[in-house]
Image (cartoon, rainbow, N blue to C red):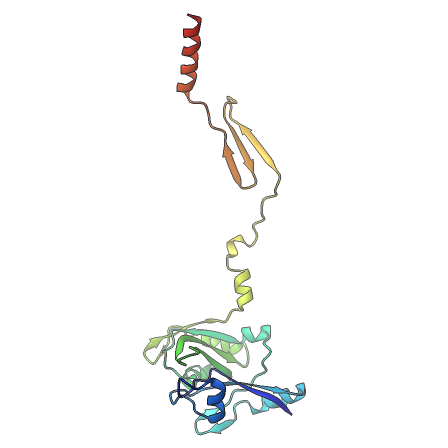
Length: 220
């Protein structure tokens, strides 16, 4: 039993129409070839059964891609990031380009929410990780006159944590530790507090001379 159906990335044929109304009246922009939708089932087992519809042809030249909405860590390991895509490329063209690498579960092109035009990058999800190794060999391959950038898909949270790998094993200095050092003559001192060092300035020689001269004048 289906509780709700929600369409995403839908571009109305007219600017005055809302996305919901455009979906009901089926007034979709003629240049839009793909639409994403979410189906909420009352029972979890029904969602698992729906996976059997993956790859089913619903119209001439159109096949649906069915996957569970909940993402897992293994999903990232089976997908690749594809950059420098043509802005008007369709998912079917990207799928055909990577078809020799292995069974493809889904192709996602990131598009502008208003115009529906691609932003120049997307993702290809394979059935297993072996296909990823073959897909990486297609880096710099051409699609519609553009050289593609193909690399492993990285989880956003992991990317934030490892944004600076050089600082990964660097421990922060302990607070409250003060260190002073003197040179051989004992004239200058340097104070180290945490990461901030404050130097005690030397008295200028000119200032010492002027004081000495004042004392001599007073004695006279």
